[in-house]
Image 1 (cartoon, one colour):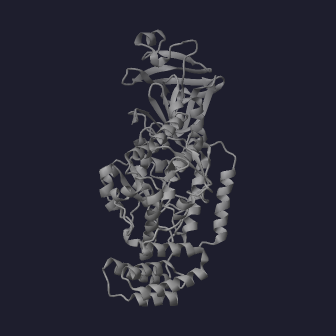
Image 2 (tube, rainbow, N blue to C red):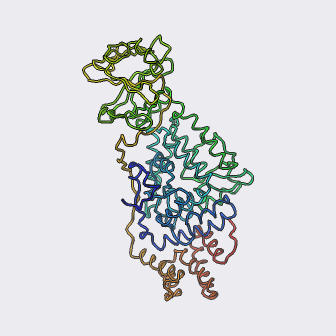
Image 3 (cartoon, rainbow, N blue to C red):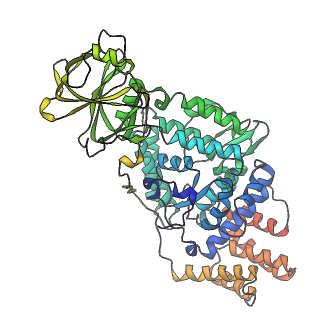
Length: 584
């Protein structure tokens, strides 16, 4: 395994474990550690005033400190106390997988960290966003349960092919935007691709709608009142720029409601409006309201049609509890109800999330089709028939029977056996010499072998993924793009060594270095770098070295003159070093 497991992670199914990668803590450079430290010091200073009260205690409860990028192993030792765990992944993973991790009480943490040039905001998920944003708030039990429940419901949301296109486009943009030296024309092209996808007129899928709820709560949520909101969304907690921007009058504050599900977002731009929930309990109330609109709870013809449009692995559950998992390809409808459903390719049958013996993908490798609903002219559904009723209608082992369903689906064949559920209801009937037709169309021919007819008056649920995870081999994730690792120049490696020396001096592991010499190196070879000089200034102030501090300030003023766009970052770093309250 590429990670250290624990009882929570041991419960993860194989198809989720494929996304986990080692954190490789030793690959974080001294520059990375300085970026983490700067962001966290600014965040804690500001967020102590504007974040939900759970934030600061949550940092301590999850083992996250200002001075060190969190080590996943250390985090997990602490997270297990509140029933959670964390794993490292490579950037964005598919939304359904992300949410399913949440359902298992597992935080997904993109282990890379933003570049110094993107210290205020990056569209790519990184350890600042995940570790300093998501982790602290899950220490609040009510919010943690909301997150788990969101994952449980969200991973069942049915996607569309368009959703996957958007996911790949966003993942690609986040990777190239964070990679050093990317051609601006390539970034512009990737952004145009996302704009084109987002403006394409397509019916929103369940996944796209629930992702909106996720964005406006888990990522960019505010809590309290529109007049006096506090921050709890991870995207805001981890972004210096957006956490201060969102508190201005330029960002509209809207009371949170189910309407947020219809409000789309642009990941590449600051948000023009945010939603404010009165409390964490209300989040769960809106989530349940949305879940009531999903095929997961409504089933029916609409649910089957959503599965067909998704062109992906999904499950239809019948009123007997029989679950059919596969890629749905066809439905015949009558009076607004499905009367025949069909899958293409490997299919498995299950009951209560456990595969039925003899009905694996090996047995149904070419798909599965069955009439469902009531028999024509008979008010009593097959599943509700007593043994006496079944005998009266000739539905009995060894008998040849002709069953005409509502919607002109007709089945003729010799009954071999029936499979019952725990309540004694028949959920599956097996035939030989079977012919199934719909009007003049033959749906199944006797020469094709044994025919298994699903029993169920209606489709009560339709959802993404299989009923039994063990039925399908889903360890097949191959992303369209992967995080770019750039080879460092000798100059960059030299700068990292300087950052490392200053870090060692501050932590007391090597106090023999000359800080004056480091400053000369910066002036002569790295005049555009600002963060290392801010760290030197902090040390000078702490050691009451006034003349050295003044020399550093003069250099930082020169940097601000050449790079006015980062002037506010320097000013904030200096203010923090002085112990002053930073104005945002």
